[in-house]
Image (cartoon, rainbow, N blue to C red; front, side, top):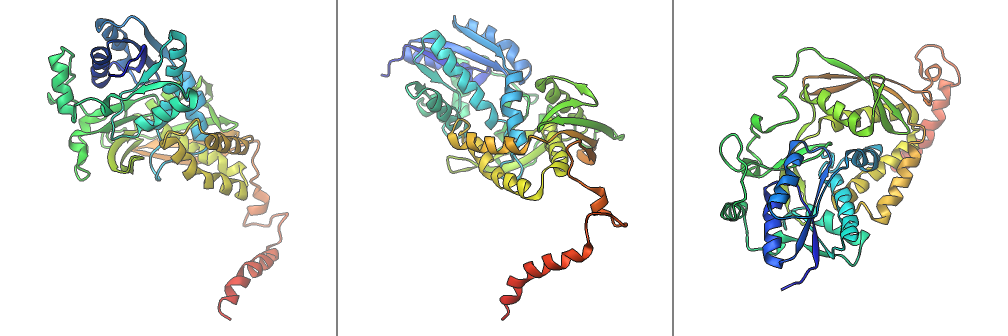
Length: 398
């Protein structure tokens, strides 16, 4: 039997981590410190401390990390326009480095020699947590209960929870709920009927956006302001990073924006179907792209865009604290120095429509591009560009 002095558990207060807490206490007979990060997941956070106390935990950390989450993790990712496999905005992936970092710090503060998480042996989060732990403290010990205990299904986990007197939440149909992960950027849903990729999700599953059928008939216009690639104001009102994202979530969600249903390729080699709501992030991505169009020249944007798949894969696969991610971040942030200005958007029935953009750093020149008589460009000059580019094509036919 392994021996641990003290374990710091990433604890949500939900079913899985409550079972893990009880299992760690019984299996290893050691003190467990719970750490609950408020990164915008909602009401679930309120009961975490009380539940930990009821299970005999004496060292309980509940911390509001929403501002750090958005400013130091979400915003850097959106400066890169990071999208995984063309659609996924990495809402779960980007939260793990922050939680892992704080676990390592708490372990040092409390004298713990071990950390633990609630990720399954089939998923990506186990990789994200443990690569972050290794990067931040190579000597830390890790307990991954889903890879160690005898529960081979959620049904077995629920049965054990009920035997131990751990309450099992029910959804509206009296069944155990979907497996979810939530933070200020998104909420994800997996399991139950969603495991069949042909079956559409139930409408009553969604919590952050309305159906487009129920969205308002009247469109809503927004103006988003950016400085150095970061959102700083909505409709002229400056707010903190977390408040900005929350405001975008509310505005986009009431117009049915931000739902995606994808089958993604997990790091562990299998495919998984997930449904996500990322209302504010969906709007932010479109707006950020819009302001960049005025400011970044062609080769700069091309080089940055070529980095997006690699950058997104690094985050998805748990390598936030890797030297290659930090290197790419430096390149990306350099490209954002002048990305400052305003974007005009229209939200309507599931759509976010770019209506206009302006910037004091714009390199767009109306006098050059106009179809009327302009200045600074002789249309005859295009002849040379075409001939140079056509040469290699002509030579192929010789």
